[in-house]
Image (cartoon, rainbow, N blue to C red):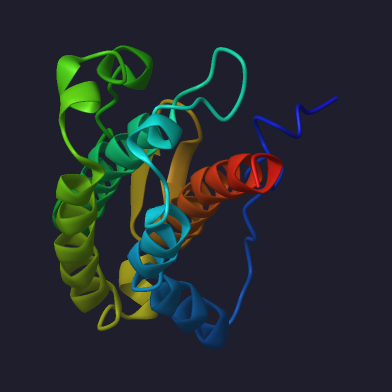
Length: 174
C-alpha cells in the first residue's frame, strides 16, 4: 500500500510509447514548474516554510532546495546521455544533502531563481531534440537503462511529486 502523504500522485510509471505531441506537452511543462512553485509558496511565512509536509519528512524549504539540486543533476544527465555512450548517471545522498546547512540557511528565492534559469536552459535543449536523440540512453541506479523519453517523464513526475507534497500541506493548513 502506497503512502498517499509521501506519494500524493503515486509512484513513477513510465509510458513507453507516446507521440511527439505528448513529448512536446511534457517539454512545455518544464517552464511551468517554477511559476507553480512560486504561486504555492509566495504567501507562506518563514515558519510555514520550515514545516514538514509529513512526519519525518522534509520541510517546504528543504523540498525547494532539493528540487534545485535534483534538477541540476537531471540536466547534466541529459547532457551526458546526448554526448556519451550509455553513461552511468551519478547518484547523490539526497537524504544527507537535505540535512546540510545550506538547506536551512538559504532563502527559497535563491533556489527558485536557480531553477528558473536552469529550466530555461533545459527547455532550450529539449525542444530542439529529435526522436533519435530522445532514444539515447543512460544507466541509473534506480531505474536501470532508460532512454531520454523516460528520463523526461521522470523529471516532470519528480517535480509534480514534490509540488503535490507542498500543495497537500498548504491545503491541510488552510
